[in-house]
Structure formats: structure tokens, C-alpha cells
Amino acid sequence: MTDTSLLLGKDIWHARLYTGEWQAGTLPPAEVIEPATGAPLGPLALADAELVCRSAADASRAQPAWYAMPYEARAKVLRTAAVLAEAHFEELVDWLVKESGSTRNKAAFEASVTIKLLHECSGLPSRSQGEVLPSTPGRLSLARRRPLGVIGVISPFNFPLYLAMRAVAPALAMGNAVVLKPDPRTAVCGGLVIARLFELAGVPRGVLHVLPGGADAGAALTSAPHVAMIQFTGSTGAGRKVGEAAARNLKKASLELGGKNSLIVLDDADLDIAVANAAWGAYLHQGQICMATGRILVQRPIYARFLDRLVAKAKTLAAGDPARSDAALGPLINAQQRDHAYRIVQAAQQAGATLEAGGGYEGLFFQPTVLGGVQPDNPAFREEIFGPVAVVVPFDSDDDAIRMANDTEYGLSAAIISRDVGRAIRLGEQLRTGLLHINDQTVNDEVVNPFGGVGASGNGSSIGGPANWEEFTQWQWMTVKGEAPLYPL
Ligand code: NAD
Image (tube, rainbow, N blue to C red; front, side):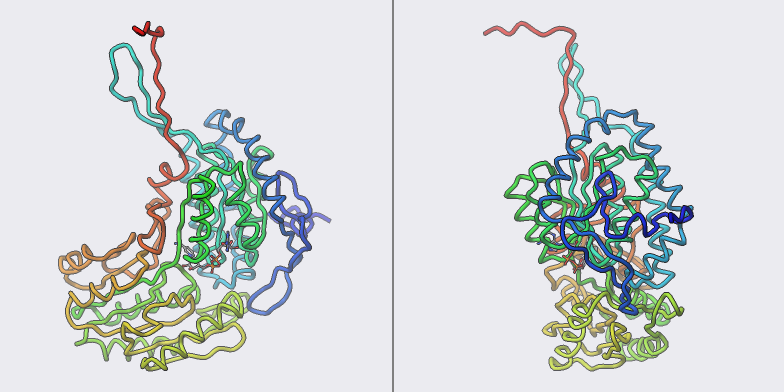
């Protein structure tokens, strides 16, 4: 029987994906797993490459009518999706907690920013779509922004709802159709929930497809002839492959990739505040965040005291089942991710780092870990860990901090803590990152800001706020004359 109080009852999503209707997948179903317990949550429909291509073709047929709708009608779909998400807030939070291992606070934050994003995007259709250009007398010359057509969105597991929605919502608002391929580990909260919100909000059939699948389905999207652009969020390794395929197929590609982000603590910082920032940046969502504080660079005069307090703090934080406790940390997403973090913690010690706290795990629950005395040749200094590991590095001068923070192929986020804002700004000016925060830690997103990295953290694209216009539209130059001229040839 249908439970009408739920956004996504199991009669809707069990073994079904969304192509404008809820239908069976084209591969044997997978199982949705609760990482904290290993319990199955229900069968997940999966799409193969052929279905991905069929959906892209279907979306390209549906897109022109969607773009031709009155702008108020498109705005209303986005607004209604926001209102529905508000009404089902607790259900969204529950899914994020169970399926992605989020703590309740992280899940509530993610659901809230997603709602804010939907409201923001509902304002896009009514904004100015371009400019009037100077031209020869009697000629009207316009630069106008038009949708690209079909946008393929490939999204990751860590902030599954928000990171998929931050592409889906603005792309739809600007008149594109979307084929979303969420990560199969979080395909309900990062995909099927989104399909259901927009279905109930009245998105026309065919304009949105949500196809859970693995790398093969993602690769199919990057070569599907009807897809004009790929918006990819995930690892740098997979992003390179997506970028290569998109270039070969002449698709626009927006790549939001990994990071190894420095938090620089200067010698005049308030120690308790600096420690609170470092712990938040390193441990939030078990460190599984692209902007996670991957290095904590601490100036030598306060290094020992900072380390002591961070260790004390780490020892007060426990990892536990977020659905059944109020533990500060939840589980890692799977054993592969846990083993990756554990391998780096072991290698770091062999390379000379000291294990100051944690370092072990039980099941997928990784202890909040502190590594001290880390040097630039240490794997913990270089590799993205994506686990709850605080990597603490001493430095001497401001120039040393700049050199160390820039000593990475990545360039996503950086942060500086100091009572001397002028000094912090001077230092920050020399950091090579897409996001820079003075007197804060590295994990920040307010929805209305452009978000993107440099170097191996992206391909120069940004998403969010003012950047969405560049991201999800394409310029058309259009001129109008009262009469066609008589050319002299
Ligand atoms: P991942 O690259 O393994 O997977 C991300 C998505 O890409 C998934 O949907 C996956 O199925 C798909 N995919 C994998 N290989 C593919 C291929 N060859 N072609 C097409 N699609 C493919 O990433 P992950 O390990 O699950 O996520 C963590 C990574 O994502 C970290 O490196 C993190 O820093 C990064 N990330 C970046 C941002 C950002 O905004 N910059 C945000 C969140 C996560």
C-alpha cells in the first residue's frame, strides 16, 4: 500500500529508477546498504549504457518545450520543489543519515542548504538573460544566454543531495534538461529523492532522468551524443577520464575534483578557537569532504600547545551509528574508503609522523586521528585521505607556510587563523586556491558563492551563485534590422 505521507515510499523507488516515469533498471538491481550497520535498505535499480543514451535522447526531445514554457512556470517548479523539500525535511535528513552515514547535524545542514539552493534557483528564470550591445544605427544587437540542451550530471557520495542538486537545480532553472547519474552508494538520497521532488513539483515528463549506476553509466553519459555538457563532481582520477572523454566528444565539461586543503594557524591565534576550527575542518563528515582540512600548518611557537589541545579534543570525539546515537562522527562510506585512510595513517608513521590520537577502526568507524610532526615528504602531507585524520605540520615563517600550502597539485580551499587580519590577508594573497577563508576553517559553502578549484581540483570551472550563468548557459549573438540591407556584391 502507498504511504502518502512519505516523499519516497518503497513502492515508488524499490528496484526503480526515473525516466519521467518510475521503471525497472536495465541491470540486475544492487542493494542499498546502511554503512553504519551493513543492513540492506532496499533494492536499487541500475542503468546500463544503453538506457543512459536513450534517456539523453529523450531528454533532448523534451528540452525545447521546457525552455519555451513561460519563465514563471519554470520558476514555479523550482519553488514547489523547495516547498516539498521543506515539508519532507525530516525524511531527507533520515535518508542522509542512514544511506550516507551522515551525523544528524551534517544531514540537517545538507538538507537546509539544498532547500536554500532550490529557492535561489527559483529566482533564476526571471533574471536578465543577457545584454544589449552597441551596434550600427538601426540594428538591435543582443547577447543572450540560452540553455545548452541536455546536461549530464555525475555526482559523488559525500554530500550526495546537495552536490547533485547544485547542478540539477540551476541547469533546469535555465531551461536545460538533465540526466543525473548519482553515485550508486548514495543513489536514493543523492538521486531518487531529487527525481521525486521534481516529479511532484510538476517537471514535464522527459526533462529530468535519474539513473543510478557506476563508472560505466557515467562513461556512457560522457559519450552520449545528445548530451551537451557534463557537470562532474568527484575524484581527480575519474575527473581526468571524464574530461578526456568530454573533449573527444566536444562536450563542455565542468569538473569539481579533489583537494588537499591547508588551514594555517599563525602564532598570534587564539588556541582554543584554532583547535575548534581544525577539528571541525578535519573531522566533519569523517573527513569525507573535498574541502576538508587536509593539512593543519601551525607556527612553531604555538605548535606543541596546539597539538596537545587538538589531541585532547580528538579524544573527546567518538564515532558511532548516527541513526541510533548522537556520536560526533559517523561511519566511513565503505571498507575501501576505510582501508585507504588506514593505509595512509600507517605509511605516515613509517615516514616519521607521530600517531598522537586514534589511528584504528572498528568496522567502518574510524577513530578521530591526529598525526603530528608531519613533513612535506610524508604521504599524509600529499595524499587526499578522505578520512578523519588531522595532519599537523609545524612551520617557522609566513613564507614557509605559503610554500607548504602551495606545495600540492590541488588548489581547492585554504584558510588562515590570526588576530592580525592584515597579515592573514597578505599571506592569503599568495595562496593558489579557488576558495580562501580568513579566520575560518576550509569547509564552507553558502550556495550563493562561486565554488571551484584550481590545479588538480578542477578545470577552471566554478559552480554556484553568479558562476551558474556561465556554467549552464551558452551565449548567442542575435541582431535584428528593420529591413535586410542590399549588399554591394
Ligand atoms: P569518484 O570519482 O570515485 O566518483 C564520483 C562519481 O563519478 C560517482 O558517481 C562515480 O560513479 C562516477 N565515476 C567514477 N568513475 C567514472 C568514470 N570513469 N566516468 C564517469 N563517471 C565515473 O569519487 P568518490 O571517491 O566517490 O568521491 C570522493 C572524491 O570526490 C574526492 O576526491 C573528493 O575530493 C571529490 N569531491 C569533490 C568535490 C568538489 O566540489 N570539488 C565535492 C565532493 C567530492
